[in-house]
Length: 347
Image (tube, rainbow, N blue to C red; front, side, top):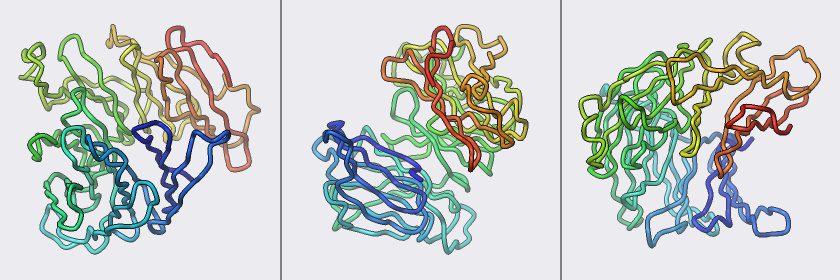
C-alpha cells in the first residue's frame, strides 16, 4: 500500500513510496496517470521527497527505509540510485543501535537540504544535496522515537513528534540547530500537523495524540514583527482541545477555513473511531461538532469498525475529503463534506 506521495515542482509527476519499499514516479499528464519509473528501496519504507531548492527542483529523490536502516538518494527522473547511507549509530542516550528506522523526510524551503528523522536514535540529519560525491550532513540530537511532522506557519521550523518520548522537536532549518523540545500529552501523532493564527497566542502548530484525548496547540516562533508580542509563548503547549477519546492520527485546517478537523480512527470505541470532530477556530472553547462519517457514507453496517481518517482539504479550501476504512472484506469510501456547512456533499 502507498504510504506517502509527493508532487513534483511542475505538478506533472507524483512520487510515491509504499510500505513494501516500492517507489514510483507517476506521470499525471498521460490520458490516464501512468507509472513511468519504479525502484524498490528495501522491504519496509515510509518516506520519500524531492529536492526543492531553486536550481535543484526534482533533480534528486530521497527515500528512507525501516529495513534496511538507511536512506537512499536517487536520480529524480529515472530513480537510479546514486548514494545509499546507513543510519546505524548512537542514540541520543549514547547507546549503539544496529537498525534505527528512517521515519519522515522533508525538503527544506530555505536551503538545499533534506530533513531526515531517524526514529530509534532520536537523531535529525540535515542532508546537503549540492555535492553528493562529497556529502555533507548535520546531525541534530533531539529525542528518541521520532516519527512524523510538518512545517510551522513560517516554513522555517520543522516540527516532528518523538511519539514514545511524548515530545515534539522543533528544528530550525535556517540555523541548522534544534530550536526546542516541547513536552506534550501522550504519544503525539501530528501527520503534518496544522497551522493557524490563534487569537490569544499568535501562530500555533497543532498535533493530536494516539495516547491522550486532547489536541495540543504549540506556539511557534516567527520573524514577522507583527507576531513579536507572542514571543513569551513560543515553544510551549498553550492550549489543549478536548477530544472524545484518544486515537487521533491527523489534524487539518486550511488558510481559507475557520475550522480545525481531527480524526480518531485508532480509538477502540466504534462511535468515536467512525466519526470526525470539527473545532470552530473562532471559538475554541466550544466542544467540537461530531460528524458520523460511517453513517453518512450510506454503506451497509459491518461487524468491523469502519475507521474515519485523514481529513484532507481540496485546493480551494471549501471541501474536506475523508477516508473511511472498511474491514478486510467490507467496502471503503471517500466521504466529502462542505467545510462551511459541514453537510455531506458526496460519497
